[in-house]
Amino acid sequence: MNTRISLPGLRSPGVGFEQPFEMLDACHDRVRRSLQLLLDLRVYLRANGCDDSVRQAVRDVQRYFDIAAPLHHQDEELHVFPALKERCADDADLQSLVRQLQRDHEDMHRLWSGAVRGALEAVAGGAQDRFTAAQESAFDAFAQCYARHLTMENEVAYPQARLVVDEAEQQAMGREMAARRQG
Image (cartoon, rainbow, N blue to C red; front, top):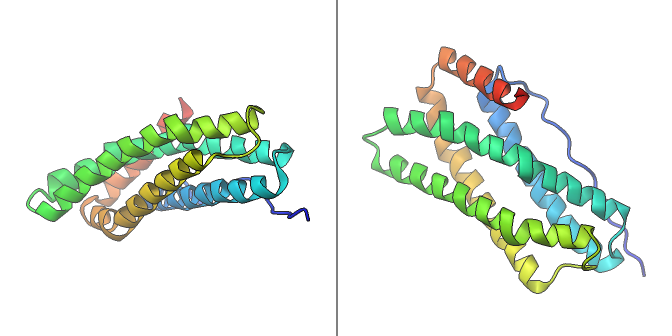
């Protein structure tokens, strides 16, 4: 029996850089959708093997984690984390959280640029027709790291940053985020 699973592409967020925290939130939504697409790819491949929809889904996931995710992490490193470090210096728990979030960025980059991206390239390029157990384990580690990271940002870091970054700073932040993506 041939199981059919849809592998839709990714859509862009409906907010603009004039609302930088909403843009950061929208990026988190895209991370979750990209990770879900990675899970869907695994299921689809087991049932159907590699086809054009798999190759397109792989390109969508790669595009997000090669281009958008690093820019998003840079947004946080340039704007969110420094504000929390400087303006909440007396909150030891928050300072520890910021250090963990920065380590997560390094871990996620390492996982993506190693086993995860390599596995996607191997399948899309025809070198293998499904993911190995080790590759799927790397996907799981990648997804778990991101899930934990997003939770800490959404529940603690972003709400606190919204309190300490005033409107004028948010507007400057949004302009810088947009400019970095244009050039």
